Length: 226
Image 1 (cartoon, rainbow, N blue to C red):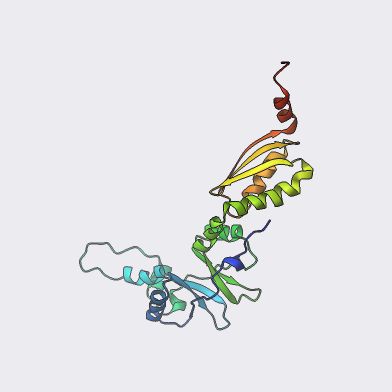
Image 2 (cartoon, rainbow, N blue to C red):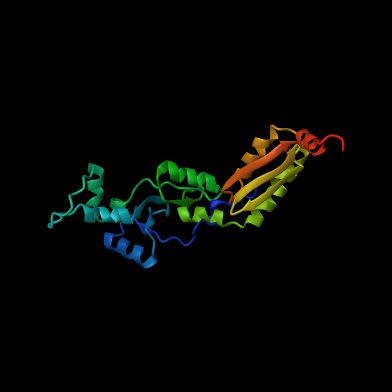
């Protein structure tokens, strides 16, 4: 199946900083480029970490509030050390959690979920930065047209499993929601088809109204003598 890769979805023109980039320069870069975080690169162009608006705001939150309207947040020792930082290397979240360009959306999304991050620097086999992919980039697969999804299911799934007994299956796709109709020769093929359709880029959900071919044939032929 034609899965979009991270290399196709990532942003290639990446705004980045160096380990020694000062606090105010980072804040200015974020504002000028309308981004909320940037990779921090070492001397070889490899992501050492990520510095975000949240990392910068930790410094503001750690300061005394003379009005007394809000309590001083509790910061762990490592958080306080970062709040006191003045350069990207001191402020960043590290190590950088990275993806590779050949990965699928599923692989990147799972890593984001497990690591609780909003973006992934994309690196090559030498760990050199190639681009960056964000949650919004991954969501672009769900902008795929229904017709393209339906054509892929018909060609790659139904077409390739026809000899296994799926020749009588058709797929309707509306707003990314797939509905399978028709008959199959082997009932065990039904969950396989559902699982395969769910893996197509852009699919939101899959439902099925599939019947064994013999049962479908019996139902069509029933009705008794006229």
